[in-house]
Image (tube, rainbow, N blue to C red; front, side, top):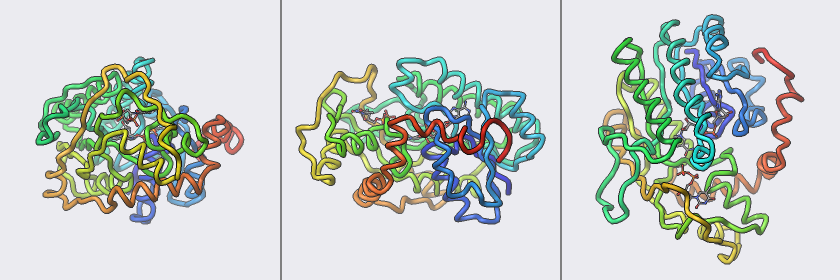
Length: 342
Ligand code: NAD
Ligand code: TYD
């Protein structure tokens, strides 16, 4: 099977590429990524020379380029991770979220339709369901929970999901959608909660907690997300949405304190700062459908996953220090210059 993975130089996409190449060495992967600030090509260095892996620097908004690529490479399956993914940035500058997350998705699907791909998989998020109230721990997001978004980011992802379902119904495109809760693990860009707190704590810098820090997120180790997508690609039913989450709800402040404890840093690094605009209160996934239909269950408990993650950031200081200094953005130029499939 020839799998086209978009956004594979980012956090989850890169973990998915490593997972797939290991689990299915008989398949080949073509990674398409335009290397925004969040894409880091050096992350893919360990697989770059592998015969069944190739990389092309391309923007999913480039209709001509994408069609040309499909014409030349004829992928069987498309997995779309490429997105602008940070809520705070979407509040500052929504436009690029609409362009990449909605228009980019439509271009990929047009190409998938034109070249008869066997599966188009859209990597979506639990944020499309909006949030749940803090005082109703009995409530969860199900696949048929109405879309009810809060931020420009989640609105752009929900719009893309609606388009994906429309392409299925109107054109018969064989689609699936997964909606996962918050991921954590290796290679997450240090603007997101967990890696930001680890990097700042290690540098004895303030740890900025929005508001009281009581907001709840449902955390999943990234490899468990990759395992779920792999199962959906191979055994999931076309036209279906699958929620992915491990029933691991945590308050932000408790995560930050846990990171301090693990690193032996004092809580007085914590600073309560102005709250995020429109801040979602609680996310909580019911993963019953993917468990019942595909037998998926997470392998990694949060207590283990967070230790693995902290240890990874301790062992890979170069990776995130390069990001903080901005040096990683010179890597592509240095290694590959402009254009072409590597
Ligand atoms: P990320 O920001 O780490 O990576 C995004 C990648 O997409 C980067 O490599 C970037 O260069 C690339 N990209 C962005 N715009 C592009 C464009 N126009 N053309 C080509 N490439 C482009 O994001 P992530 O955290 O790995 O998230 C991946 C996907 O998973 C996103 O669709 C996101 O909505 C979804 N998701 C993320 C989480 C999470 O907790 N991080 C949870 C659920 C779903
Ligand atoms: P984030 O990692 O941005 O993911 P998302 O907003 O997609 O859930 O943030 C996770 C939670 O942590 C969210 O409630 C906002 C909060 N947060 C902070 O308190 N401080 C920070 O510096 C960041 C980045 C996030």
